[in-house]
Image 1 (cartoon, rainbow, N blue to C red):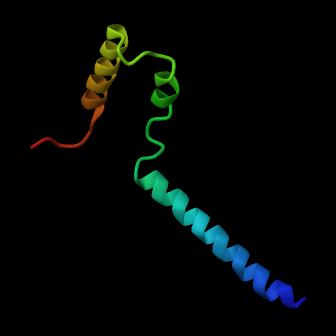
Image 2: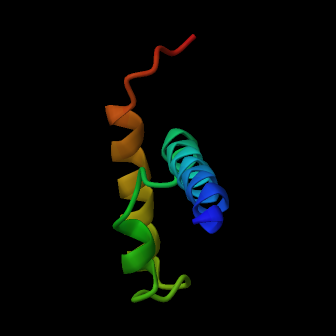
Amino acid sequence: MPALYIMIPAALLLVGVAVYIFFWAVDSGQYDDLESPAHSILFDDQDPRHQAAVNREEASAEDKDPSPRA
């Protein structure tokens, strides 16, 4: 029984830290683009067709950017 007095607060602290790290990762943009890293492993970086696709994707991302430009 005395072990529960240590284990329950420790478990709550661990869950709190995990939730904090998860929200930090979401806010810092870690989960913004989930597809490009998975597809980039399939293509050679020197392939000009791949570079064109990357440039086209970056351009479309800039077009979708809702931030105001100065």
